[in-house]
Length: 250
Ligand code: 13P
Image (cartoon, rainbow, N blue to C red):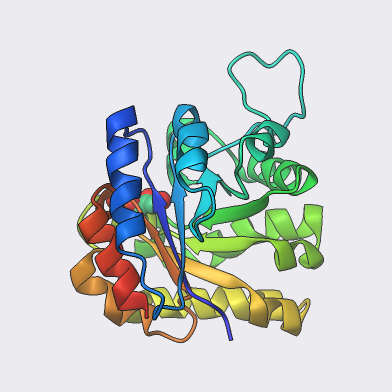
Protein backbone atom coordinates (compact mmCIF):
# COMPACT_ATOMS: atom_id res chain seq x y z
CA UNK A 1 0.00 0.00 0.00
CA UNK A 2 1.40 3.39 -1.00
CA UNK A 3 0.88 6.17 1.52
CA UNK A 4 -0.35 9.32 -0.16
CA UNK A 5 1.78 12.44 -0.08
CA UNK A 6 0.50 15.99 -0.30
CA UNK A 7 3.39 18.33 -1.14
CA UNK A 8 3.23 22.10 -1.34
CA UNK A 9 5.55 23.70 -3.90
CA UNK A 10 5.55 27.34 -2.84
CA UNK A 11 7.55 28.32 -5.94
CA UNK A 12 9.04 31.83 -5.61
CA UNK A 13 6.60 33.02 -2.96
CA UNK A 14 7.15 33.82 0.66
CA UNK A 15 8.42 36.05 3.42
CA UNK A 16 9.30 35.26 7.02
CA UNK A 17 5.83 36.20 8.32
CA UNK A 18 4.18 34.15 5.57
CA UNK A 19 6.31 31.09 6.34
CA UNK A 20 5.45 31.32 10.03
CA UNK A 21 1.74 31.73 9.36
CA UNK A 22 1.52 29.03 6.71
CA UNK A 23 3.38 26.46 8.77
CA UNK A 24 1.38 27.28 11.90
CA UNK A 25 -1.78 26.83 9.85
CA UNK A 26 -0.59 23.49 8.47
CA UNK A 27 0.44 22.18 11.89
CA UNK A 28 -2.86 23.19 13.47
CA UNK A 29 -4.76 21.24 10.80
CA UNK A 30 -2.79 17.98 11.01
CA UNK A 31 -5.14 15.18 11.84
CA UNK A 32 -4.05 11.96 13.54
CA UNK A 33 -6.89 10.19 11.72
CA UNK A 34 -5.36 10.94 8.31
CA UNK A 35 -2.72 8.63 6.90
CA UNK A 36 -1.27 10.95 4.25
CA UNK A 37 2.17 12.50 4.51
CA UNK A 38 2.56 16.27 4.17
CA UNK A 39 5.55 18.13 2.75
CA UNK A 40 6.42 21.78 2.18
CA UNK A 41 8.92 23.03 -0.41
CA UNK A 42 9.80 26.66 0.39
CA UNK A 43 12.26 28.84 -1.53
CA UNK A 44 15.87 28.26 -0.42
CA UNK A 45 16.21 31.20 2.02
CA UNK A 46 13.25 30.01 4.07
CA UNK A 47 14.34 26.38 4.37
CA UNK A 48 16.17 26.88 7.71
CA UNK A 49 13.21 28.79 9.22
CA UNK A 50 10.80 26.12 7.98
CA UNK A 51 13.08 23.42 9.37
CA UNK A 52 13.09 24.99 12.82
CA UNK A 53 9.30 25.42 12.80
CA UNK A 54 8.82 21.81 11.69
CA UNK A 55 11.14 20.27 14.28
CA UNK A 56 9.47 17.31 16.03
CA UNK A 57 6.51 17.36 13.63
CA UNK A 58 5.69 14.79 10.93
CA UNK A 59 5.74 17.41 8.15
CA UNK A 60 8.48 16.76 5.60
CA UNK A 61 10.72 19.44 4.12
CA UNK A 62 12.00 19.70 0.59
CA UNK A 63 13.70 22.19 -1.72
CA UNK A 64 12.68 23.18 -5.23
CA UNK A 65 15.96 22.57 -7.08
CA UNK A 66 19.63 21.76 -6.57
CA UNK A 67 22.91 21.97 -8.43
CA UNK A 68 24.25 19.00 -10.32
CA UNK A 69 27.62 19.81 -8.71
CA UNK A 70 28.84 18.97 -5.19
CA UNK A 71 30.72 22.17 -4.34
CA UNK A 72 33.14 24.73 -5.71
CA UNK A 73 33.12 27.51 -8.27
CA UNK A 74 29.42 27.55 -9.21
CA UNK A 75 28.25 30.99 -8.10
CA UNK A 76 24.57 31.08 -7.24
CA UNK A 77 24.13 27.31 -7.16
CA UNK A 78 23.09 25.25 -4.13
CA UNK A 79 24.45 21.75 -3.54
CA UNK A 80 22.39 18.79 -2.39
CA UNK A 81 24.69 18.30 0.61
CA UNK A 82 23.81 21.87 1.74
CA UNK A 83 20.11 21.10 1.48
CA UNK A 84 20.58 17.97 3.60
CA UNK A 85 22.63 20.02 6.05
CA UNK A 86 19.79 22.52 6.58
CA UNK A 87 17.12 19.89 7.06
CA UNK A 88 15.72 18.88 3.66
CA UNK A 89 14.88 15.25 2.99
CA UNK A 90 13.52 15.81 -0.52
CA UNK A 91 14.15 18.00 -3.56
CA UNK A 92 12.30 18.63 -6.82
CA UNK A 93 14.21 17.93 -10.01
CA UNK A 94 13.08 18.86 -13.48
CA UNK A 95 10.07 20.99 -12.58
CA UNK A 96 8.59 22.22 -15.84
CA UNK A 97 9.39 25.81 -14.88
CA UNK A 98 13.07 24.81 -14.64
CA UNK A 99 12.84 22.94 -17.92
CA UNK A 100 10.95 25.64 -19.83
CA UNK A 101 12.15 28.91 -18.29
CA UNK A 102 15.74 27.91 -17.47
CA UNK A 103 16.54 25.49 -20.26
CA UNK A 104 17.00 22.33 -18.21
CA UNK A 105 17.06 19.31 -20.50
CA UNK A 106 16.62 15.63 -19.70
CA UNK A 107 20.38 15.12 -19.33
CA UNK A 108 20.73 17.91 -16.75
CA UNK A 109 17.64 16.69 -14.88
CA UNK A 110 19.12 13.18 -14.76
CA UNK A 111 22.38 14.60 -13.39
CA UNK A 112 20.47 16.54 -10.72
CA UNK A 113 18.53 13.40 -9.82
CA UNK A 114 21.80 11.53 -9.26
CA UNK A 115 23.30 14.47 -7.33
CA UNK A 116 20.27 14.53 -5.02
CA UNK A 117 20.58 10.84 -4.21
CA UNK A 118 24.33 11.13 -3.72
CA UNK A 119 23.58 13.79 -1.09
CA UNK A 120 21.07 11.53 0.66
CA UNK A 121 18.03 13.42 -0.61
CA UNK A 122 15.00 11.81 -2.23
CA UNK A 123 14.47 13.44 -5.62
CA UNK A 124 10.94 14.19 -6.78
CA UNK A 125 11.32 13.80 -10.55
CA UNK A 126 8.85 16.07 -12.36
CA UNK A 127 7.68 15.04 -15.81
CA UNK A 128 4.94 16.23 -18.14
CA UNK A 129 4.03 17.25 -21.65
CA UNK A 130 3.16 20.62 -23.15
CA UNK A 131 -0.23 21.32 -24.73
CA UNK A 132 1.27 21.04 -28.22
CA UNK A 133 2.78 17.66 -27.37
CA UNK A 134 -0.55 16.40 -25.98
CA UNK A 135 -2.43 17.62 -29.06
CA UNK A 136 0.11 15.88 -31.27
CA UNK A 137 -0.50 12.60 -29.42
CA UNK A 138 3.01 12.62 -27.94
CA UNK A 139 2.15 12.62 -24.23
CA UNK A 140 3.31 9.08 -23.48
CA UNK A 141 6.48 9.29 -25.57
CA UNK A 142 7.53 12.65 -24.05
CA UNK A 143 6.94 11.46 -20.49
CA UNK A 144 8.63 8.13 -21.18
CA UNK A 145 11.70 9.93 -22.53
CA UNK A 146 11.84 12.09 -19.38
CA UNK A 147 11.72 8.97 -17.20
CA UNK A 148 14.16 7.08 -19.43
CA UNK A 149 16.84 9.78 -19.08
CA UNK A 150 16.96 9.00 -15.35
CA UNK A 151 16.48 5.27 -15.81
CA UNK A 152 19.45 5.00 -18.13
CA UNK A 153 21.79 7.04 -15.93
CA UNK A 154 20.72 5.97 -12.42
CA UNK A 155 19.05 2.59 -13.03
CA UNK A 156 15.69 1.31 -11.86
CA UNK A 157 16.90 0.69 -8.29
CA UNK A 158 17.24 4.46 -7.88
CA UNK A 159 13.44 4.70 -8.13
CA UNK A 160 13.15 2.92 -4.77
CA UNK A 161 14.51 6.15 -3.23
CA UNK A 162 12.59 8.64 -5.35
CA UNK A 163 9.17 10.03 -6.12
CA UNK A 164 7.78 10.91 -9.53
CA UNK A 165 5.41 13.83 -10.14
CA UNK A 166 3.35 13.98 -13.32
CA UNK A 167 2.66 17.63 -14.03
CA UNK A 168 1.22 18.35 -17.47
CA UNK A 169 2.57 21.78 -18.39
CA UNK A 170 -0.82 22.96 -19.69
CA UNK A 171 -2.41 22.27 -16.30
CA UNK A 172 0.08 24.21 -14.17
CA UNK A 173 -1.27 27.48 -12.84
CA UNK A 174 -4.03 27.53 -15.44
CA UNK A 175 -6.98 26.41 -13.34
CA UNK A 176 -7.46 23.62 -15.87
CA UNK A 177 -6.49 20.38 -14.17
CA UNK A 178 -6.04 17.15 -16.08
CA UNK A 179 -9.16 15.03 -15.69
CA UNK A 180 -8.84 12.07 -13.34
CA UNK A 181 -8.90 9.78 -16.40
CA UNK A 182 -6.14 11.72 -18.18
CA UNK A 183 -3.93 11.74 -15.08
CA UNK A 184 -4.60 8.10 -14.17
CA UNK A 185 -3.73 7.02 -17.70
CA UNK A 186 -0.29 8.69 -17.63
CA UNK A 187 0.42 7.52 -14.07
CA UNK A 188 -0.41 3.93 -15.04
CA UNK A 189 1.79 4.24 -18.13
CA UNK A 190 4.76 5.45 -16.01
CA UNK A 191 4.28 2.62 -13.52
CA UNK A 192 3.94 -0.01 -16.25
CA UNK A 193 7.03 1.33 -17.99
CA UNK A 194 9.11 1.03 -14.80
CA UNK A 195 7.55 -2.36 -14.05
CA UNK A 196 9.17 -3.69 -17.20
CA UNK A 197 12.46 -3.16 -15.33
CA UNK A 198 11.35 -4.02 -11.79
CA UNK A 199 7.73 -4.72 -10.84
CA UNK A 200 8.30 -4.43 -7.09
CA UNK A 201 9.99 -1.03 -7.29
CA UNK A 202 7.34 0.21 -9.73
CA UNK A 203 4.57 -1.03 -7.44
CA UNK A 204 6.00 0.85 -4.46
CA UNK A 205 6.82 4.08 -6.30
CA UNK A 206 4.76 7.11 -5.35
CA UNK A 207 3.55 9.02 -8.40
CA UNK A 208 2.09 12.43 -7.55
CA UNK A 209 -0.16 14.50 -9.79
CA UNK A 210 0.37 18.25 -10.08
CA UNK A 211 -1.41 20.94 -12.09
CA UNK A 212 -4.29 23.03 -10.75
CA UNK A 213 -5.12 20.68 -7.88
CA UNK A 214 -7.63 22.51 -5.68
CA UNK A 215 -9.79 21.49 -2.71
CA UNK A 216 -12.76 20.94 -5.04
CA UNK A 217 -11.06 18.57 -7.51
CA UNK A 218 -8.59 16.83 -5.19
CA UNK A 219 -10.78 13.94 -4.05
CA UNK A 220 -11.64 12.71 -7.55
CA UNK A 221 -7.99 12.79 -8.59
CA UNK A 222 -6.59 11.27 -5.40
CA UNK A 223 -9.02 8.36 -5.37
CA UNK A 224 -7.59 6.99 -8.62
CA UNK A 225 -5.49 3.86 -8.35
CA UNK A 226 -2.14 5.18 -9.52
CA UNK A 227 -2.40 8.74 -8.16
CA UNK A 228 -0.45 8.63 -4.91
CA UNK A 229 -0.71 12.25 -3.92
CA UNK A 230 -0.51 15.79 -5.16
CA UNK A 231 2.16 18.37 -5.88
CA UNK A 232 0.31 21.55 -5.17
CA UNK A 233 1.34 25.03 -6.35
CA UNK A 234 -1.11 27.90 -5.98
CA UNK A 235 -3.40 26.16 -3.50
CA UNK A 236 -0.46 25.39 -1.18
CA UNK A 237 -0.09 29.09 -0.35
CA UNK A 238 -3.15 28.96 1.89
CA UNK A 239 -3.14 26.61 4.87
CA UNK A 240 -6.91 26.25 4.53
CA UNK A 241 -6.78 25.24 0.88
CA UNK A 242 -3.70 23.04 1.22
CA UNK A 243 -5.01 21.18 4.22
CA UNK A 244 -8.44 20.75 2.59
CA UNK A 245 -6.55 18.82 -0.12
CA UNK A 246 -4.81 16.81 2.63
CA UNK A 247 -8.23 15.99 4.11
CA UNK A 248 -9.47 14.91 0.67
CA UNK A 249 -6.51 12.52 0.39
CA UNK A 250 -7.64 10.56 3.45
P1 13P B 1 -0.48 24.79 -9.59
O1 13P B 1 -1.06 23.92 -8.49
O2 13P B 1 -0.45 26.24 -9.20
O3 13P B 1 -1.11 24.51 -10.90
O4 13P B 1 1.08 24.37 -9.71
C1 13P B 1 1.41 23.04 -9.87
C2 13P B 1 2.88 22.91 -9.76
O5 13P B 1 3.63 23.33 -10.63
C3 13P B 1 3.42 22.27 -8.55
O6 13P B 1 4.77 21.98 -8.70
